[in-house]
Length: 178
Image (cartoon, rainbow, N blue to C red):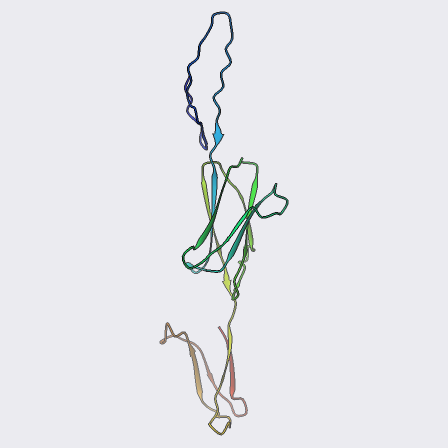
């Protein structure tokens, strides 16, 4: 007898000889095992991977305990977990973000039902937190200089002005968020 494993399964022994005896019923077993399933998770902002994000993996049967975790880096932009599973177990990926980023609108956790023999890929698209700065315009005598134009730009795009302000009398500090 020879068997062809169904999708998501494999067999160590897929064929066997059978010795049939007239008048008797022989019992033969060929065992299928589920192939491992893989979950690959990345964290990014506008298609740029975020280093320093911790990704924790758990499942519905682990009572909230972490099965596996890793932290993204400049050389390892994603984390993966491979497990033997059945279709009725829900897995959860939870992220802990580095300073300067917030969770996406969908939250810091995502749930998955993994399929044996398949790879599931998921990307958390995070939100950068606003940065704030103060520019003070004064003469060397520390007097306020009104009417001075202040332009804020990203040094990687010096021709693109993000914000523009003019100082006023008595208000030398210009506060901005980006």
